Figure 1 (spheres, one colour):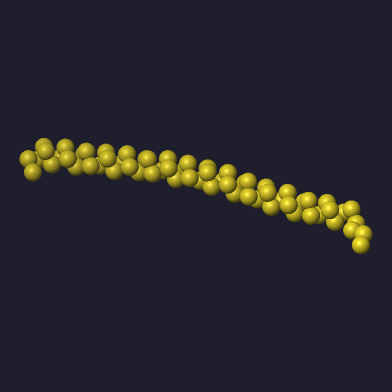
Figure 2: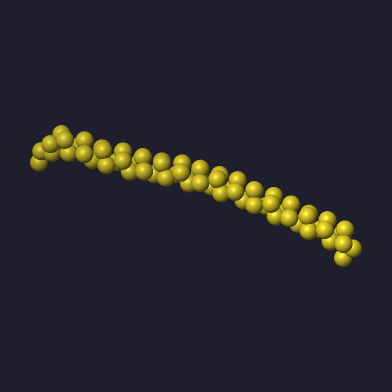
Length: 63
């Protein structure tokens, strides 16, 4: 059975495409995780500032 040469190119293209999808997905997940971590740090800093402000107000009121 003779397989045309272009069929090999098609199969190689499919394999390459699958590899690139995997690689790109992995990179995007890493970038997304970094963004989420930075947003979480900003949120935690804001919570800490609010907690400190609340404690300072309570101390000044004598509660």
